[in-house]
Length: 295
Length: 251
Image (cartoon, rainbow over all chains, first blue to last red; front, side):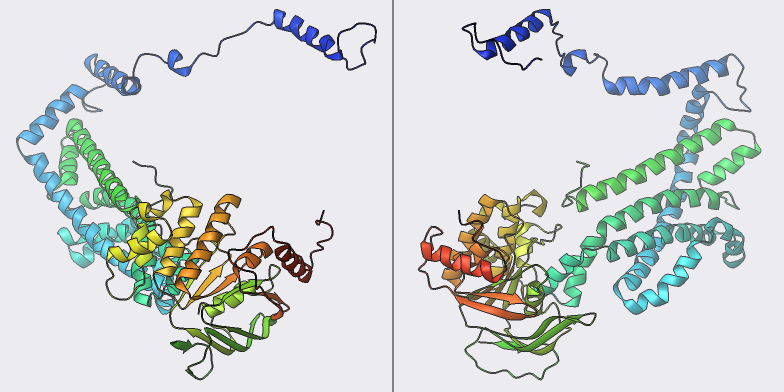
């Protein structure tokens, strides 16, 4: 745009020159409407669109099975799996197996939580505890716990004890690490504020350190639950005479892919359920968190 | 007045007419003396402001008086009942406002105690709120209520208005002035705002080189007026002490 002075002869002010060019441009402009997103959105709800993918996969699977491309020895058809799943529930073998497996996980989880949290408290709260506990735990942590199954069988026999021990071991370390990090990560400014308010050491631990470590502890619990199921699968593949793993081993011997898939689905659901429980706990215990978003 | 001693000196509980007595106080960090043979007296009920450039040791002095820093030499006598409000409100995020106020009080105080203190700072409508839902000014007032509920003989304020916006700061300063008049406790306000110091304090101290380098009594009537020429004079004098040339901004 020219900013040179307009000739003095016309009576109009300088600006008229500029506004005229604007007017010319405006006449040539094509305006496009900005369409609100609501108008562009399709009418199919999101959940429906999201379920379509898995459903299509199921249909494809069923088709492949029905046409004989996918034989029952390789993978049973979805319909067959549903039928077998129903039968297993009806004759009580699946609920019984789930009960046994849940007991093992609960036992291991309880023991692991007590040990992991206890050790973390000792090394998180006391200098001497840290010196004594942290190094050995960090060393043991690097041993793949599944590798200890043979040793545990020698020590504990083939009953419930080695299975619960494996789960305990798997659960202990993630909990320890996260609770410990949570305790050490508590804002020193808050601890100082607590001190200035006259809190005793016990009061500080109770009102400042432990609540501050809670988010870390729940993260640890989440990891631990994931590992607990993993440990359960390993533990139950060895010398089990009950439980979901036992059902699977039996099914393998009879080439029953349908039963195996049913068991896998059960494992998945139990894992999902556990995650749900932790999220519920977080919703209850962490509602004070500024970063909390899971309403 | 109940006094207690901390630091490596023998307890000498004496019925003095002081809210704070500091003598020969030294504190060094890695061999560098931040506070060097400092002397400070505060009378009961006196409002003292402590000014100084950043890093001059004024916050360290406050932390020592609060009992948070005990790696010291010298005599420090402070009342047993003392309270601190920090620059950040430092509320426990996992405790509702009223529980924050009662935190650390001996015995099992009733919720009404907290409500009364919160009412005093104009925050009685947020008693049951989580700290995360408070605005900056509200959180600072909650922190103030937490300090006041202890009924301190000495209130230590560490740049409590530093993080507030200009409008909120004016209100908060006014509130502190009113609370002090009502409570009559001794106050030590650490700040870098000269105007704030002159507005609130009976006596303004300037800290430099680890000692109280300058002392200025402010005998203006309350409530004080910033537009008062004597106010401007005091302010200019203190700014000069702090090494700020006031001639340039006098226009």
